[in-house]
Amino acid sequence: MSNLKQIISLNITKFPQNLLIPGIENKISIQVINKSNKSENFKFNIDGENLIFKFKSEKLQDKIEFSQGETKNIEFSLEPTIDGFGKLKIDVYWLNIIKTLVKVQKVRDSVKTKKFGKIIDKYNLSTAESIEKLNPDNYFIEMTKEEINQAEQALKLMKKQHKSSGSAANAENSPVIVIEDIDYKIKILAKGYLSNKDPLRALKLALTLSEKEDQMFLYYNLARAYGMKYLQELIEVIKNIKNSSVQQKLLKQVALDHVFINPKHAIKISFLIKDKVTKDSLFDTIFGKVIESNPIQVLDLIKEIKDLNLKFKYLLNVVKNLLDRNEKAEIYNILSLALKEVIDFIELHHDNKKDKTIGFDLLK
Image (cartoon, rainbow, N blue to C red):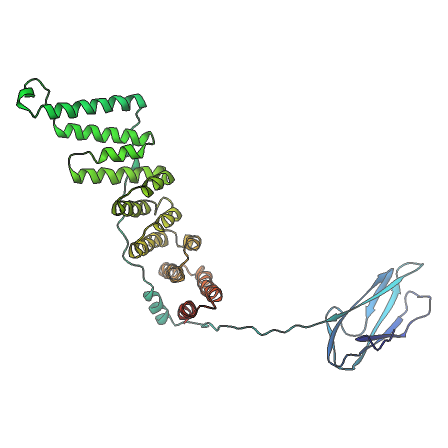
């Protein structure tokens, strides 16, 4: 079995006669020599059929280390389980132990309570935006298309009569139509159009009210009500509004409306806001409200956020909320997630010195 080209040499130095006898020790000894010019690791697997193995030397389940040129003996005995023939099988595995150098970042084992409080204070949320409640059902009136057409004709007639009643010649023959009646008809008709999924016509009608303040009040509330029931359709309408100021104000209001309906939708709407200050304030409001009502939900919502500083801030505020509630069970997991987010960020931006600095600053 010896061969100089082999890394290992196996020689059977003791083997029983051809006949194995039950009840006595049928001893076997195998001499193993490491023929490598350095230390090596080997693993031996001895198996067979119709035989029971009893080992006297080192446990063979684990690796066995051989120094350069070392010789070791593997001893065991065999016991037959049946009359007939048995099979003995010896497998030898040469193990190559791989060592590698990895870069590590030491994180504090503990943080003093006072210092932790200062860390959290550094990431306080901004003052929450005011969220005005709105009942969308107040802005939907069921009307058939025929009823809407009749209301349109009635509105035209009312406007015509109101205009003609202003002239002295027609004053005696025309019924008195006051502007408040026309405004009331406009509001009813706009809500009818909203129920028939025609938000554009409803919004245009709102802008025909006599008073500017009433126009904008109805305009924004019609849009908000429609967004509470048909969000995606409203977003498409808002995207086509040419007045940027009105468009951005609407997006902000619709985002706030969805904080309690579906905060994930609120976050996605906020990404459409162009002004960064307004957008960040919305994020703080959304996450602040969720942290108050269901802090663990934040773990899912932060997946929508790419900004590392914002992620870190919201996770720390969840920790603060749980500490205030004396609910400490989840805190370790949340802090672990916060650290993982930072370390993943550093790994992703390892070539960017500025981004790496941001990551390491958060670890301090």
